[in-house]
Length: 309
Image 1 (cartoon, rainbow, N blue to C red):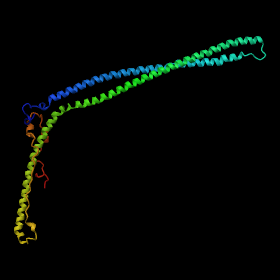
Image 2 (image 1 turned 180 degrees about the horizontal axis):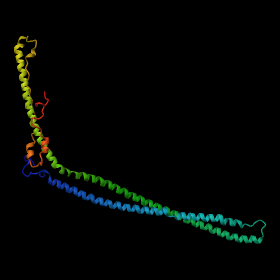
Image 3 (image 1 turned 30 degrees about the horizontal axis):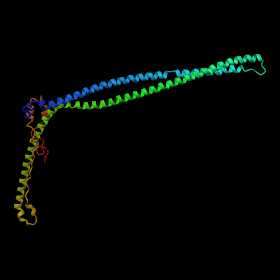
Image 4 (image 1 turned 90 degrees about the vertical axis):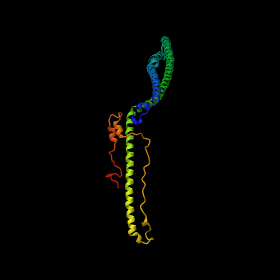
């Protein structure tokens, strides 16, 4: 620290930092960070489990869509029905006796038609069995599909839960990041301290120059007042006394004195100037202080060559 800021137990910049409070804050932030890390690991496990369930449900759905039991049963019914229409029924119609046929041929056709009817009945019975199998396959497929839909809804709820937890965790991580950025002030503290020293020296230098300009202005105004009053007295003595008293009553007045006061300010600033900054060991170079320093004489309003009137 600058010699003007040193005191017992306060020799360096670190002594003015609330160490215990900073350590407690850092421990609190570190604990919250560890808790967030555990929550993040748990969320990753849930996400991996949800991904595995999604892949499993996708495979099961693919198997359900590839199951051709219903299609096979329907095709079997169609084939059997087509065979009955194209083979059995025409063959049966061909065994109907013609008008005037011989009795022996009629008996023979009746025997053959009975056999054909039995074959057609077996075909119809087979189609009824296939139809029952088709209905059972369709019901099984519907049941499996509904089960898969319930599983998909369950997975969707899992995904939404993971998304909600991820959103909450992201908000808490952002808050944690803001908490961690507070420690950046400690890193910027030395630079801010050096800038503050230069600012204090600059303000004290300005106060000195400001007060000097006030004194200079009071002197100029006092001389102006004295010169003006001398000229007024001379006029009054030479010409004013010869004029009627009620003609120009205001010619006997004189120029009033002007008070230029500078209120006290920056009285609480420590005793730090540019010379002490250049000599202090806290600054490795006096370039910053020299850059802020104003040359003697300044550029005040009433300074010579400053453009003042």
